[in-house]
Length: 566
Image (cartoon, rainbow, N blue to C red; front, side, top):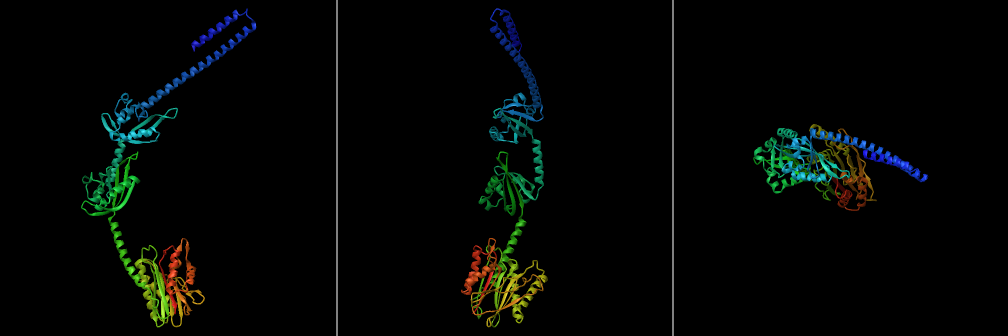
């Protein structure tokens, strides 16, 4: 600035001398030159002032920047946490006092050293992978690593890393926050051990990446009998049964845990004494922040008592199922077409698809005397042995009532049977209430008189030989055994030669396709179409139509009796 000021003053003196010597020159041209030179000098003065102001601003900025630099250096160097600045290759460019103290090395010797030299040898491959991902812009929030220190024991450190960007947006370096978390990790491990060791109802043990036991809690010793010393170093498969080891089940379990994070199973395992116990277990894969497998933890619970109870229950179910099947087969002896004089008869039974237990549907046909026949179809509530026992009871008592009280009306017979079942429920203190839907007809084969009664069942049908007319027989009443002291209705119909009676349980009418049902009208339509067929063909047509409507299999058991007056 001083040099520029001197040059401007020299120019002003020179301009004054020219004016003094220019009185003899042509006035206009010389005067114009003096004016222009004066303007230029003024502009130079203005530029000089601007430069002076800018120079002062730069000096102030420099002083402020130096102050901030010194403040940053103070904060960086005396910060309580360890801070490092490295290039993208991990070579230290800056390090504060806390970082040097943490690593046990002087700050000036720490500079220009690769940070990886302080990482434990086992973890250096992972550290190189971390640097590579950071240089590519990956976001790593926190990572734990074992650091080696000069003249001190190793520590577990938590690294928080942030990339530094240049003006062009490219990564120019890395900023590291390093915290010693050894004490925290030791506390966590101590708490974990206390918790794990206190758990005696669960076997908890840890395996390394090679699937060898590295920790064995007291619960594992209690359940399996192996002490920690005996279990340490054993392969994780040593508690599996020989047949499971032969099938490769331990390897499959580990592969599932690695792939999905955990593998659950319930299987038999071995104890030290060679005995077996049934356990529910979970194998969890342990991985580090980069997805590298570190080992496994297995938690087992002995559920042998529960399994044994399930086995006993299954055996009991199978026994009852066999008994129920035997009883039901006795209820469903197929009727011969000429079983009764004056009638052609046919009976049908279809079990529901994938039915796990024997149902309560049944039919019966028996003589009541010369020329009198009773036909019955019914559906007892429940499944299995309970339903089979109730069915047997209903059939036997109904036969006894019909044969003992021959003069009693059908409606009165149904009322007595209902009261009997209600009393049996109460007097026998049965655990579950049960009821029976039933349709009954008593036929005089000589006169053709048929007396119908119903208790909560589908209305009986009469298919007339003349005109193929179908009559729905109006009867009514609640299912048997539901409520005592009930009244029932009966309807008398005269059968002509060739007229056909159809009795069916609701497994036929409730055959469904989606939300649609075959229904009573659907059964009537099929009966009309097959009316000219034999009784067996007619019944088979109805049953096939129900199956076809339901897509090949029924959703409920179905019984059907077809009887035609000769």
